Image (cartoon, rainbow, N blue to C red; front, top):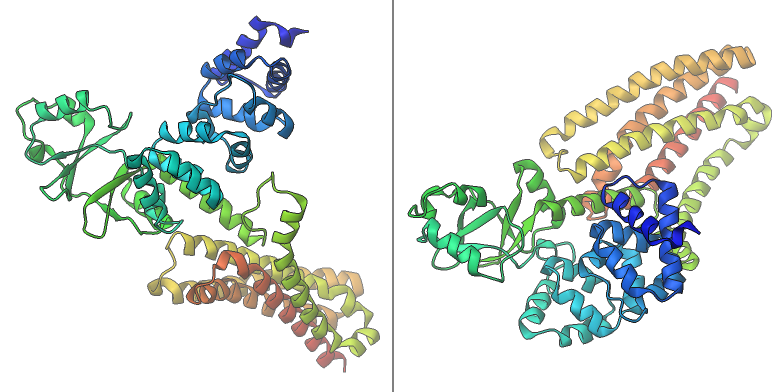
Length: 467
């Protein structure tokens, strides 16, 4: 068969390297790797992975089934490249860790930058984490333990301890010699931090500027003084906003004494912003930090709480309907039409809620513009309410030929659209003030409020007009 042919296999490798691989080729490639695992051909797989970008090799591992992944990791003479391991999806990474020996994990951690090592350690349970840390050299162990001592979402957890810093009195020539001779510097860096005698950052110099400046020039004379320093305990989402606002490529991280302890780069921030966006999207749906590899029971448990809350809020809406049971029995058309009002209000509320969650996350919603946004949502509610009141009234008139029903749905539509807009912004802001993540709880409350107001206004107005 063609996938057993080495030439065909290496063609696939080249296509992946050139980003030309399509879905069908990818299926063939997975079949090749699966076949090599069955034949215990670890050397061939290792050599092939070296030909690829680490992200592509990680993608192949992610697409193997769980049994094949386990067999691959346990193959004799197969060593997973640290750069490949760090590119693997976190949920799959946690699974792969279970198959790795302690020595293999130590090898991976020792050959990664500190920020990547921290991410791996975070996925280990306390027992394994302590065992791994105790096997690391004292210097590496101290650095990782110090980072782990800070809150999970802090700048310290995403910074790397490998950075380039030189004294302010050095010349360009001294700096270049130092960069060439020092083996402990990061493999890639865009900026060189300038520090004073107390190791406090006072500026930065782009590495390209060093190469274009004469050797006798003092570094302090070519540095940029407007250096933004990030406290180690700053929330990582706040760090992301700073990078976005100031268009930073990198930034230094300082401890409580304002001494340089690490560096955060734009690629770290890109990962943070992606994770925060995914997290907010999942929480808005009441799902939480769910991964595709999570088991049935784990997923059920995570979804249960918010579904239970939703059940209680739905009961509240049903109780409101119950107050008008006699009216509904007399005018069946009310039962037919009331879901329209509630549904329109719910959708309008979720639109406002999504926009508000985003503005809160990006710090765009402030005390100065809060009243203005409330007024804006009120105006949007009125405008949309009037538009859809006219549309709904026209449909109801054609459907039931009843001017009273058309008037009822028009009034309730306007009221519910206004309420949807107001509570779509008030609920998440109120939850934020109570230190509750608005992305988690807002949707249930907004939906309940719009349902209750929708039913109450429509049925209440209906009861008034008909009786």
